Amino acid sequence: MAVSVTLPALGESVTEGTVTRWLKAEGEHIEADEPLLEVSTDKVDTEIPAPASGTLSSIKVAEDETVEVGAELAVIDDGSGAPAAAEPAAEPEPAQAPAQEEPAQAEAQPEPAAAPSGGGSAEGTDVTLPALGESVTEGTVTRWLKQVGDEVEADEPLLEVSTDKVDTEIPAPTSGTLLEIAVGEDETAEVGAKLAVIGAAGAAPAAATPAPSAPGKPAESAPAQPAQEAPQAPAAPAQPAAPQTPPEPSQAQPAPAQPAAPAQPAPAQPAPAAQAPAAAPESDGAYVTPLVRKLAAEQGVDLTSVRGTGVGGRIRKQDVIEAAESQKAQQAQQAQAPAAAASAAPKSPKLEASPLRGQTVKMPRIRKVIAENMMKALHNQAQLSTVVEVDVTRIMKLRAAAKGSFAAREGVKLSPMPFFVQAAAEALKAHPAVNARLNDDGTITYHDVENIGIAVDSEKGLMVPVIKEAGNLNLAGIARKTAELAKKVREGGLGPDDMSGGTFTISNTGSRGALFDTIIVNYPQVAELGIGATVRRPMVIDHPELGETLAIRDMVYLTLSYDHQLVDGADAARYLADVKARLEAGEFEGELGL
Image: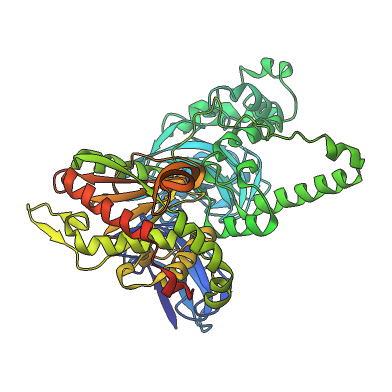
C-alpha cells in the first residue's frame, strides 16, 4: 500500500515551505518516524519524519523547490509495490514530451549511431528546464556539472540553475553520454526550453555542442571537440534536414574553424578543471542545514573555512567530512613539529582577513527574511529608545553563592539571564501598553500572557525562540527553558512552536561587550528590552552608616525600544523603573534556596 508524505502545518501563518535536503533517496528503506527530509520556512528549519515504514518509492518535490502546506512530497510503499526510481521529481514529463517527435527527426539524421538513444531529439533525450516554482517562467544556468562527452547516470546532478526564487540542481532524466549543451553558463532560458541532449552510453557527441558555452569558456572547450570529431566531418554536407531544425546549421559551423584547433590544448579536459574554483567563493554566507552544522560540531570543523560544492555554494555533508579528514592530517603533521614552535604563538589574537573581502555573494534566505522584518518594523512603527542604569551587584552575589547548588538541583547552569527575564515579565503585568499589539483595524490588543522571546545570535542569523508564559515561571523554570531553547538553537532543533507566539522580546546585546544598543523592535510587538554588558566600576552609593561613599559596583544599562504610536516616553520610563527596582532589590533568596 502506498502512503503519501505531505507537508504538515509548520506554525502559525506559515503557508509554504522549501525542501532543503532529502535524507533518503528513492528506493531506500525507511522506518516510521525516521527523518525523511529537511524543510525550511520563513520561521524555522525542521525535519519531516516518515509517517510509515517501507520503501521510498517516489520523490514528488525536488530539493530547493517550494510547495504549499498539504502538498504531496513523496510516496512510501509498504513493500508490496516496487519503488518508482524512474520518477526524478516532476522532470520526466518535460523530458519525455519531445519523444513523440523522435521518429520524424531520426529519419532526417544520417548518423544511425545516435538513434538507439530514443529520446526527445534526433540524437538522444532532451534535458529541459522544469517548472521551478509558482510564477517562475525562466532560469539562468549558473554552472554545468558535466561536460560534453561525459557519462551521466539517471538522477545524477547535471547542472545548476538560478531563478529569482531558488537555486537548484537539475538531474539527468536518463543515463548515457552528454552529447550536447544547448544553453551555456550565465545564459537564461524559459521553462520547458532544451538545455542539453543525453544519448546512449558511449555515443559520440555532436560537433556543434560547445557552441552555446558561456563567454570565456569556448576558447578551451569548443575547438577541442571538433578536433576529435574530424573523421565525421564529411557527414556534415549530407544533412538535408538543416532548414527544418534550428540546431542543425550550427553543427556545420565548426568545420571551417578547425584550422584554429592546433593552437588550443588537444584534450577537452581543461574546461572542467577551470570551472572547479568558480564555486569556491559562493560558499561564503551560504545556507547550512542543521544536520551539516551538527556534523561539523561533532568533527570540530569550522564551517567558515569550508568551501561548499552544492547549489549556490551550499556546504554538504561530504564537504564537512573531507574538511575533517584534512584537518586531522594537518594536526598529525603539527604534532610532529618541535614543541618550541608552539611557544612562539602571539599573546594577542591575530586578526585574519575574511574570505568575503572583495566578493559579491548571494544573500542567504534567512538574511533576506531578517532584512524584510527589520524594514517592516521601521516602516510601520515610530521607534524610540530609553536607557536606564541598574546596579546588579546583589544579583551577581546571589548568583555566585547559589550557582553550585542550583546546578546540582535543577540540572542547568544559573546565568544572570533568568533574573532579567523574571523582572521584565513581572513588570509587563503592571504595564500592559508595553506588552501589546497594534492591529490593522485601529484596535489595540493587550496580551494576557507574557511570552518572552530571547534574541539569539546563531550561525544562520538572528533567531528568537520564545519562553511561553514566562510570567508564570519561577527562576528555575525560566533557567531550564532558556537552556532548552539555547540547545535547540545550537543543534538546529527549533520547531515552529518554539519561534511563534512572542509578545515581548529581550536581547542580550552585552554578550559581546556592548554597553547598550538602540534595538529595532521585533515587529509586530511594540517593545523590546536590551541588556548591556555588566561592568564593575566605582559608583557613589548612599551607605546607611557611611553616608555617600565610593564603592565598586556591578552596573548594567537596560535599553527599552518601543513604538511611540502606543507607548509614550513616560510609559517606558515607568516600566524600566519597575524592572530596575526589582533587580536592585535582589529579593530572590527564596527561589534560590538561600
